[in-house]
Image (tube, rainbow, N blue to C red; front, side, top):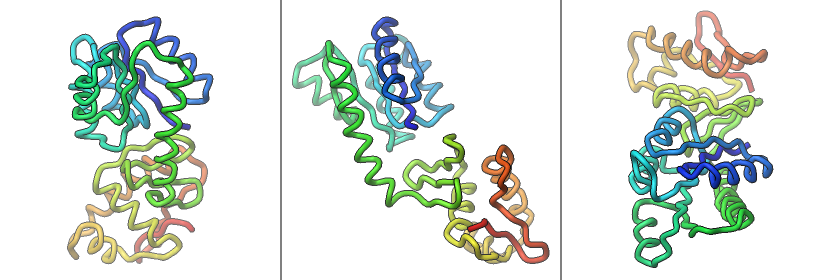
Length: 222
């Protein structure tokens, strides 16, 4: 299920979009100003952000720039009453993937979202790794399990990626250290990051994927 954030200061418009997109099967959150939007984006991974240009506190173009700076894979659809060609060009230069002029039909918004998500889906076949019910999204740097996006640090991501690349193979502690950290030394850091990963991808699920092979190292079940 795709996550969508609506950023719109007009409550009625925001509510109408929320109801329509929820009916379409998306998981929808709403922010009513730019500051609230940035906080939500830092806390959760969104596939699509529908972003009004004129917002209180932080305007739409600034929010768009921040999104694209830190989450370049997130689709941003800029929504505004500004219909001049110069405004549209500016919107794209701020990083928007699409530009929709108010007023618009809900069906047009849905069609544009679906078109962008189809592109993501085609890319996902290349940019994903899977093991059992866990997916590692290589483009968004998140793991997905139980329809839940799990944010990972860079090191957690690289460690999980290496385990999945070698799923079903018992990896020695030394081999993991050399390939993930680039050195052969103290392995206490490995234990710390294995615990971090288990807390994130195994703790809440009955089937545990990461296995300890006593005296040797670790493996992730095939």
